[in-house]
Length: 444
Image (cartoon, rainbow, N blue to C red; front, top):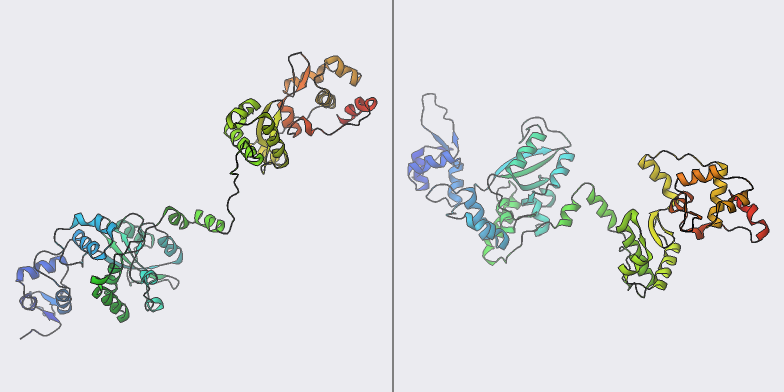
């Protein structure tokens, strides 16, 4: 006659299970069978919860020691049909009769910020109701109370417990805005392949059997019964882009970029296509940074004729890169900041504002700019006065220099100060030769 009542003795449990009493004691020590306190004050015998014995028997409990976590994961991998999970876990398999110790369950109530952070955790692997959408289990939908059901490494669960003050489970006051989550902590080697975010369908169905909802358990049983006919499924893996999209900042930027058009590019041959040649010039000058490059160096690097390079330079004058400019001093080209952004650059670098030139120095600089190369006598003839002090100031600031014939010319620093791309950007003077010199002095 089968024993009756809510609790069983060790002998009765052994009889019901068809096992030796030593096996029952081993199941009690492993936590597979639940011991309940005996109400009798003088009783020292163990009383075992009958429902735990029945669950163990229904789970197909067999002889031998309880299944380790590694064995459980190996058998799950074999049943899933997923090659990557199987290859990772197969080495853990020695004997796998049961699966109940694959993970420990923790219930938490998380406020929205922590729930968002958990959802973005790269180690989170969804199962149960969180896998309902991908696997088409529409009946689970809104009927479930869990906001998230997922596997996590044990260390990640401990960290989450610290963040919520260790208030796991259903005890204590619960914030009205908090969401309940079901976390399955894996103690030991992590069984899932890198970047997995969804468990195989058989494992998700196995987890559904632990739900209190009858519809969830029914779906789990149906999926597991059809396991022999189930084709191989692939554990979903996060690509590098998917992991980035879950980031708080970069993901927002990538999401905003989804509606943009393709990045403009120049794919033509620079030897025949002017925009392509211009793009190559910008690239070479960018690589050279402040050193710039001569016309000869650019032609050698890109493979252009002199005519093609001049055409590309003219194209860049009409279509400069945003915020940048191509500056030319004689046969040397530089990639520089556009004059309109100079104030922001100076503010960023914290450079002090330069002392402005005197009127005399400005007049001399204008004369040299328009009349270069020019002698000291030529400058003084136009101004009608000695210019030694002004010339010394301009030489000290590097705005003018002597050329090979010992004549005054402007430097590249003059182009920077004047905000010019080359000398051709100088404003034109009046055409009448008799009034040009007066115009130079006035321009200063």
